[in-house]
Image (tube, rainbow, N blue to C red; front, side, top):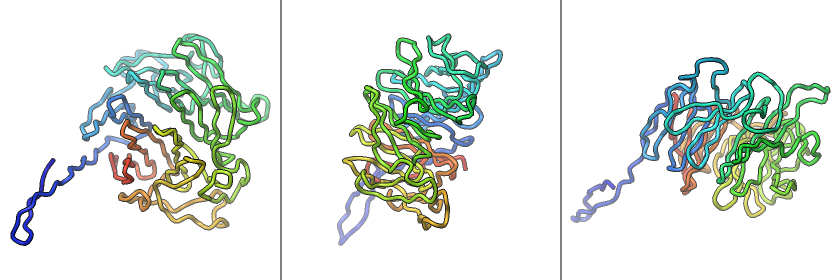
Length: 352
């Protein structure tokens, strides 16, 4: 640690100066984020690059092109990403398959049959996917998927499948939101998974967060589901009365607290001890009658968490490290912000 020498009343003193990690310059916009077993931040940046940033700010590429070495279609893309305990990265593809990227940079087809356009359970080679929007991994290596079916084949609109890829290589469907009344929604806006495999879902249309437990039980953790279709409000406090505006990405910390982005409030919010509380972000919220979808003023400001400003409507995705620092893709500001465990927001990496 560096020290600063200064003179006071004729005496010299040595004070420690905390070194700061320099802001990392990204080659292009960050799209997906994860943290590996060594607390390296893993980013998918525009252009098919998978980037690794160490805790002290050193950068490298796991691969500078996820399509490298793939000789024929389908060519890998990355619309959703997750990582397991062995630092293997899994990437959902717009061509209805899931790819695996090993730590040495090797990309291979992991699961799914390309170009089929339907969902089908089975083993890794025969299972099929349609439109994977979110993926999460539990500590045992099981992968959980929220998958939209937008075929509207029965004229009843979109619905979602909640699916699981077991460590034994089997793909199973855990729930269909159309057939499960307590999970019914027009829009899943985010997903998280805890250490034992409970699934947490942001109901974007209902403006609430639900827990889908391993035993199949569904509970609403916060937000008054479907109370307000338009002109939402944000009310903190007891979960029985709290209201959310637009909950999106979810993570669960070591205390089993639920942390999520609210993309229209430009805030990071926590559910703990049956309370809803803002932990970062302080932008001005427009009056309820001004914007029918609800909105706060976008901004950009580092510093103490409850004075920081974010710009989430374009994109907000989070990951957490072993020290409980949270890394946030701030899409409107084209950067990655860090919310430290002690409550400070800083810019960790930027494409600007």
